[in-house]
Length: 125
Image (cartoon, rainbow, N blue to C red; front, side, top):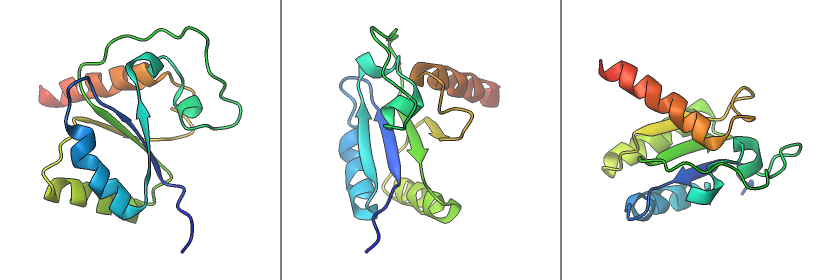
């Protein structure tokens, strides 16, 4: 079996049950899970994924994020569709989801969260 390079960055506020709900789906699909802690939200997406050229920032700003966020890397359209379908079937809801792009690799994790939050708010209007 080929080794998958699919990875998700998962941020969940303290006390959230999201990880327990999501982990079985990701494990079954062979997706790597990297948990993003509250003190790591000031790192770049590229750093959190371990990409070359994205070094850890010293003493990064770490604002509190109030909602879970899932950042998906290395998924084909078909595999992304499968993941989202499996999440829906299991009743797993993540309000903020993003796919890694060349554009957002250099963004701080909390900046990506802020962008998703703004988009989410605009869609709710």
